[in-house]
Length: 318
Image (cartoon, rainbow, N blue to C red; front, top):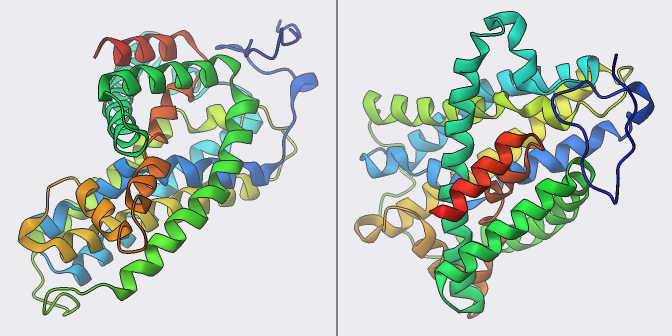
């Protein structure tokens, strides 16, 4: 029987156990900003570069991105709708499908993904901070890691609140940046339809869909505190459109940057992001990189369970 355990000093106290009804709270619209910001980051921008770097036109790249987002996001949004109904973490929910022992394999994949995201995004965050505020990248990597760990330690409520404020900041910052993209010079033929190439198109579609599906391993962790009488369709829609809009926006921006850079493309999109941003004013590009970089570094705050601490520790060691 699950007992009600109050939070001590604002720290997260729920782990793999069910969240009791007495602790259920929150509004379903909170899922929109949460999942919008989870995708509105530099790592997501890099996902949109695949087909352009393989020779596809911007038109077919954007089409592959949109189809991949719309299909891939379905699966993570369906899982999000389970959170209020069961009150359990996503990995615990996998036990009925895979068995108590079989779920260990799923957990292993989840751990590898946590560690990978943390390492990759913490490095991006450190580089962005080094460009913006100066100082050694390694120092900023440590600072970003500690900040993510603190957010993870406090947990669910702080994550939701922080993402709401970050959504407003991100919309303003990248909104200005996106408008800038309409006023820069592009190579001739950038906006032509171009010839359809199956390999880069399907590659881009597969990476985008897989990227969106990858959220499914912990998506209900961020809806399980809500009351079970929350309409399933509303949980689905807020999760779906929050994630889809944030993901599609960043990926399309990445594709546009790659098309604009042409042969001088650096392979990550960060240099292009900074160059285009500086068309507005000096330092804005670095600020754009910064505002989009730590989002999945916050993935170390995605779960309050022990595996998050291990993933964060892995990031620190790297």
